[in-house]
Length: 159
Image (cartoon, rainbow, N blue to C red; front, side, top):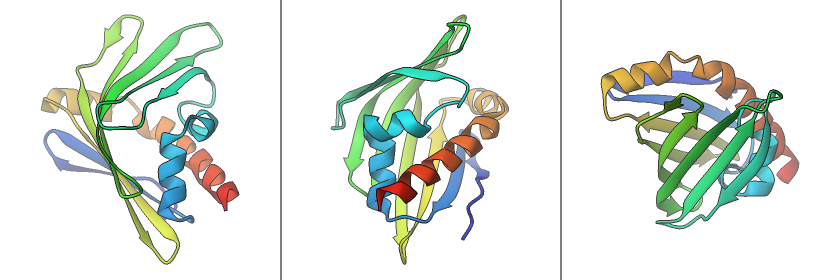
């Protein structure tokens, strides 16, 4: 099983992150959509997550606020466009922090299960190549890899 994060660029506007988890896809889907699980793995381990709001339905919104030890807040907000439990999740997302707010980008996660192992592929589609490259070159793997390691721990405990 490939438990390491793989990042690819399927188009000039997209990058995809793929990783396998030793758990059924319904567990991985729930861990990515329910606040009681999200607060345990999402984000950077050096930041608290004081706000985790999810209205998981098409047209429903979410809001995640991360706060550093210095009190600086980073926020992810968006609206769900597609919710097909436990196969697919699509939402628009905006990232903001003091001095910067991204354009909205599209996030599509697919969950494929085979013999109790789930392959999660999250594709992020930006409106421009420059926005994609900026996000891709921001060091995203340094945050996603340890977050996915925590996600693996959460889904392992769900069984």
